[in-house]
Structure formats: structure tokens, C-alpha cells
Amino acid sequence: MNPYIGGLLSVMLVALGIALIRVRDLFATMALLSAFSGLIAVLLAVLGAVDVAFTEAVVGASISTVLLMTLLRRIDPREVVRQGPLARAAALAGVGAIGFVLLWGIDALPPFGDPQSAPTRHVAPAYIERALQDTATPNVVTAVLADYRSFDTLIETTVILTAAMACILLLGRKP
Image (tube, rainbow, N blue to C red; front, side, top):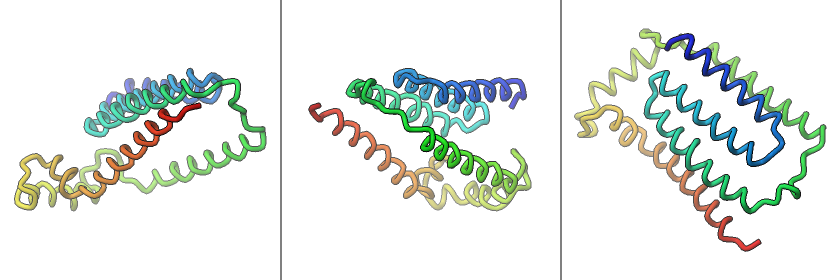
């Protein structure tokens, strides 16, 4: 990845994150969350994970935004109460702790693109060699997502369907 593009995307993501922290309007929050999700999709595409980028664009930037904006129509912004400073400080501490653990875990990852990393040496060659005979699927990516990881894909699809059903049920309620 071009370091200038990566740097620009990183700066834009940080700017959107800061804007999300500072914004008070619920509609603006939804719009900024959609933009953040769209930038994450662009970042994933630039990194070469086009399938994950497509999923993020469809689910994160599109469907989620439409559902949240539709639900937002049913909320009176004057009735939304901001949490007190103690609750916000506790939430900030929790987010900081999770961020610290995630950043600490990055140290255990192999360098990006390392051809000698364990997944590249052990898992990927096995999938490439055996995908056609194991799954009768000529596309290796499809074989991994639909056959080897089928339960994971099924559960992810079930989560998305459940969230959509919950939103539809909420929209159908009379205020």
C-alpha cells in the first residue's frame, strides 16, 4: 500500500473519530458513522481484502445506515438524555482498556505481508492444494468462505438477518 494513501486514510479516520466524539446531533452521528464505515471499506480494499471491503460497504455503510436512519425517524431527539460525566468517564475507560489490549495484541502478529508467517506457510498452501478435491469448487476463496468456513458464514448471516428482523419489528411498532 502506498504510504501516502494509508496516511491520508488514517488521518481521515482519526478526524471522523474525533468528530463522532464531539457531535451532539443524532442525525449527524449516523452520517458520520456511515462515512467512517465507508472509509474502512476503502482502507480494506486498498489493503487487498476486497471481499471484506465489499461486505463492510454493503453491511456497514449501506444497510446499517439505512436501518439506523429509519429507526432515527421514530426517536424524538429532545427525549434523548446524555449520560452524566461519571458514566461517560467509565465508558471512556472501558474503550481505552479495550484499545490498549488490541494495540498490545498487534505486537504478536507477524509483519504485514510476511511470506514466512505461519498462515502463509501452513494453512494457505493446504487450502490451495486441496480446495478443488475437498469441495469441488474451482474458486479457492469461495471454497474457503462457503465450504471450509461455512458455519462461520452461516452464523454471520444469521446475525445480520436477526438485526434486520429486529429493526423491522421496531419499525412496525406504533408509538
